[in-house]
Length: 249
Image (cartoon, rainbow, N blue to C red; front, side):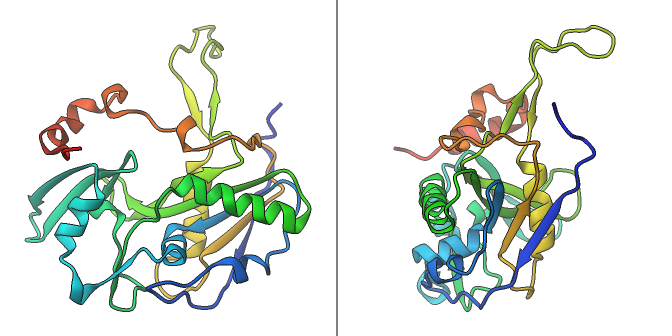
């Protein structure tokens, strides 16, 4: 039974500055005091810096990096006059393969590698350290929504949670059977977490959600339970432009 009257308790964690090109996260994670049932949201930028996924701007061409990191890409000139690189990276539609220049100390910060694996490692570490068993770890980033101004948060990796609720086979209030509907449980929470983290100099790359009962914990849960291959996506007619730019394996 879902509790739709539940309150969300998001706890922002202010940290020291993480400095590119490489700066480990374990010391910061050691300071977290976690409870059973918590969900830890961590910005992908900090995870990338932890892995050393940073390239000096003076030593690389950003467009070349984007095309290297993306599985599909599409170049075009925006009406503003800027060259835009639209990409599909890690099965996520994102600009510039997620490569960021803000708070980067003259580096390009790439997306972390093997994000689910890293989330699993962090989850295991935090569970043992805090002596808990139910814990979610979620990697987040900001992205834009088509036909909307502004950025919101999105999930880029996860461990320890079921990201979907399957309600196919249930009926609506008029008895019509739902044949396709699955509920995205995690992206709305990631969007809230990212809005709390901020986009500039807040130094809150970690947010803890405490006491939320409407998402099931599953130590095997990952993004593999969540993403849709482009060929199955209902927006495939809009994604076909990427087909001609698929990278050679």
